[in-house]
Length: 91
Image 1: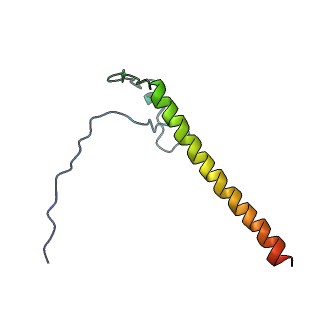
Image 2 (image 1 turned 45 degrees about the horizontal axis):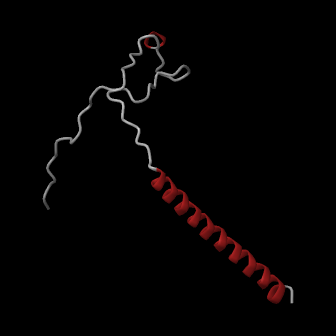
Image 3 (image 1 turned 60 degrees about the vertical axis):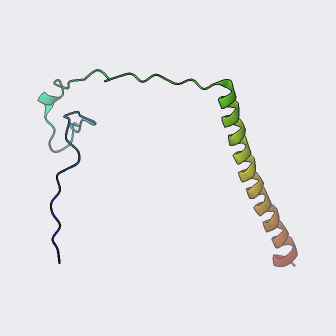
């Protein structure tokens, strides 16, 4: 049986803090680190893409179609359940 070779990690730590875990009440809390939080400016602001009116209409119509499909499915199930209750269960 072959042993697997250890591979080098594909990622490197860039030193950024995603979430500050120095929270009051936690076992490792240190008050002196609260004031030292260094906030870095965002690397680059992404441009917010605006949808064209045509794209907005397409998204709106697609969501309305799916909403109608789901509501029609639930309505059909409810009607079939009521018919089952009337014709079979309570007969």
